[in-house]
Amino acid sequence: MSYTEDRAAWFEGQGLWQHIPESDWRDWTWQLKHRLTTAAHLEQFMTLTADEKAGCAFANHKLAVAITPYFFNLIDRNDPNCPIRKQVIPRAGEMVLSEEEQLDSLGEDEHSPVPGLVHRYPDRVLFLVTDRCAAYCRYCTRSRLVSNAQDYNFHPEYEQALRYIESHPEVRDVLLSGGDPLLLSDKKLEHLLSRLRAIKHVEFIRIGSRIPVFLPQRITPELCEIFKKYGPIWMSIHVNHPKEATAELRDACARLSFAGVPLGNQSVLLKGVNDDADVMKALVHRLLRMRVRPYYLYQMDLITGGSHFKVDVRKGLEIIQALRGHTTGYAIPQYVIDAPGGGGKVPINPDYVEKITDDEVTFRNYEGQTFHYPLQSTPKKSPGGAPAPTTGLESIVVH
Ligand code: SF4
Image (cartoon, rainbow, N blue to C red):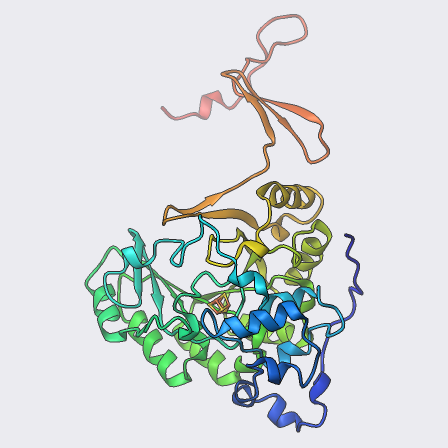
C-alpha cells in the first residue's frame, strides 16, 4: 500500500452538519449530546457492512459505541476499509477470542492499592479518574472498565486516591487517565489539579487524553487557563492516522501549547490503520507541524477480541527503520511493547549494532553501510614515529 496526501490541506468545517449553527458545532457539550451511539443511528448517515452490524450488536456487552459528529466527519462512508472507520465502528472480529488475550492484559488491577489508582512503578502512579470517553476506540486496553459495558462497576475514589498519593512521598509523577480526564468538568479537573499541585513531592503531572482528537472543542480558553494556573501539566494525546490531524486538532494543540502544555503523541500500531511506513511518516510529520512530539508507538496490548487489529512486530520494526535516518529525529516515536501481565514498557528497536568487542563497536547506518567506532584510545604518533606533540595545555592542568 502506498499513501499519499495533500500536505498543505487540513480538513476543516462541519461536514455533514452544515445546517447546525456554528456556535453549537463549536460547543463541546453539543458534540457530546449528538454522538452517534447505535447501529440505527449510524445508518442514518452510512451503510454499515454485515461485519460492522454484527460488531455493533455485540458492542454493548464489550465496549459501548460512541462517535462525536466532529470525528464522524473524518470517516470515508464509501470505504469499509477506511482507517478512521475501523478505529471507532465495531466489527465482528471483536467477538473472536484468543487464548493469550486478557481482560486486564497489563495486570493493572493487581497493582491497585485503592480504587482508580495503579501503583506499579515505585515513583509514579496512574490515576484513573473516569470510565467515560468522548468516543470509544475498538482496541481500547481498558475496555473492561471504560464505558461500563461489561458491568465492571468502576468508581474512582478521588479522596482515597489523593490521600494515598499524599502519604507516599516516593510518588513524584502522577498520570491522570481513564477513560478520558478531559471529560471531567473544569471544576472537577481544577479540584484534582490543585490538590495534586499542593503535594510537595509530586513534581510531574501529566494527562493522557484523546479528547483533542475526538472533541477539540473541549480545549476551551477556560480549560487552558486551568492548565496555566497549575502548570506545567504535560499531555499525551493519541493520534493514529494523518487523517485525524485536522485544522481543529491543530488549533486545539496550539491553544494547549500556548498555555504551556508540552505535547506528546502515543499511537497504537493497528492492522489496516497505520501499519504502513508511508502512513506513519505522514502522521509524524503532521504531528510535528501541530507542535506534538511523537512519543510512543505501541504494539497493541493483548486485549480480548483485539486479534483483528494485531500487527506483526517485524512490521513495526520495519516502520521504525523506514523513519530512522530518513526523516527528522524528533519525528521518530519509541516503539514499545507493554509487557503482558505488568512488566512495564520495553523499547523494541531495529538492530543497528552488528558486533561489540573490547576494541570497537561495529554498526550499520540507515543506508545499510557498516561503520566502526573504536572503544580504546590509541596515543597519536607523529609522522616520524616520535611521540606526538603535546597540546601545550598540560602546564595548566591542576592536580
Ligand atoms: S480514548 Fe483511550 S480510554 Fe477511551 S476508548 Fe480510546 S483508548 Fe480507551
